[in-house]
Image (cartoon, rainbow, N blue to C red; front, side, top):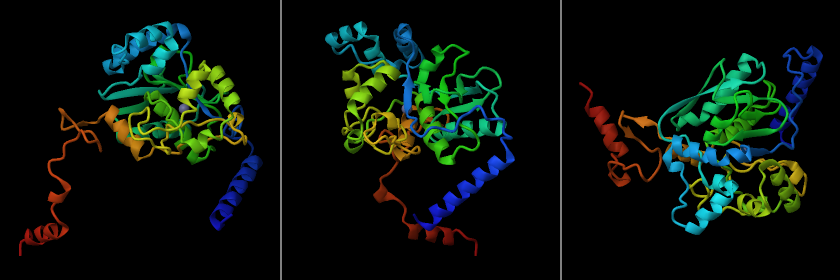
Length: 327
Ligand SMILES: [Zn+2]
């Protein structure tokens, strides 16, 4: 252990002792401390809504329609199995700027509400979707009760009845470590934006106990073994499901509980929105630029007006700075 982590540990202990001595003044006793083994599961709508939810996704943003016309065989299979249809239908909100409202299911201190919403808005650095708190019933409804970490996917939240949460952040309080706000709140918000899980690299998949994984995903997602193989146990390929080059540090990498790993330790996944995530968010949700022109941050689709070779050199710039001065 190095010096700084020793100091950090000592500080954490002091804060803990101080909090215990002061008693629980935050009135947050009901929330258990976060169990370490929590992973994320994307929440699925009830089976009877799967086809309707796919229609809603297409209504919000027509590009969400899966490309099933190309294969009659595939189309027939999808119609017979709404679960497969729902895995193929994306749930994006589309490229028009949107403000999604956020409310909290339980009474939540103002500073915590602000902190959660600010982490949700980390995505709006490059995306045209932002989140704003409301005291009324929000589009996004957050609970901090039991049930782990999860969110419904993208436009699916529109189908969640108003008295149910669309996102669960079990046990989050102002005492929760800042890094967990980055890792968990931003990840779950990614799901709300319609981003699915990224595949993982082989070395991580090798840590998973297959049988336990089958049982876990059957229970939490209703997936059969073939789907678990395809969605979780197949390592990253050149092109990931998010359409960007495979990136193992994506915030949308699976966050899996210790209960399904061979060593009992959770798979943490990406710990913060990274450059690839930001670029992807900007491509799906481009920010308006100069009114009518949308600039796609960091993508090939955005045409630069000149090449890097044609850039004005630093020397030329310095000369211009000097020569423009009135002597
Ligand atoms: Zn997740």
